[in-house]
Image 1 (cartoon, one colour):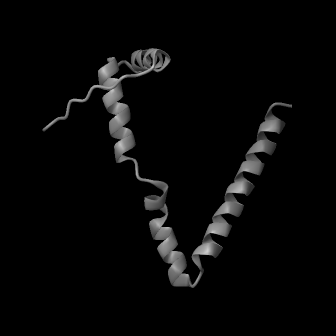
Image 2 (image 1 turned 135 degrees about the horizontal axis):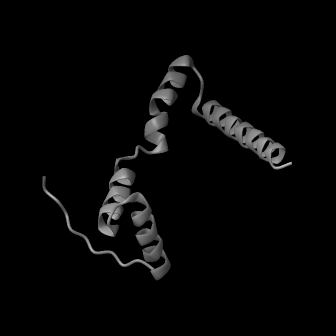
Length: 91
């Protein structure tokens, strides 16, 4: 497997956090940084995840604006439900 070597400069607090998290995961700092970067690079974007859903809605006749409004409403509803749950759990 071909590899790429990079050098990055991290603020001291970020470097310290990286070392701490690496230790907790049982990895060396460089190995943990590679893991984080690889995971992030391979993670699909929200647009990539939603592409098939958007396509299905287009086929249904729903406009992009209607879909975006529906998604926004659902996100707001989920956040409101979480706030209520958090309040009830902390009461």
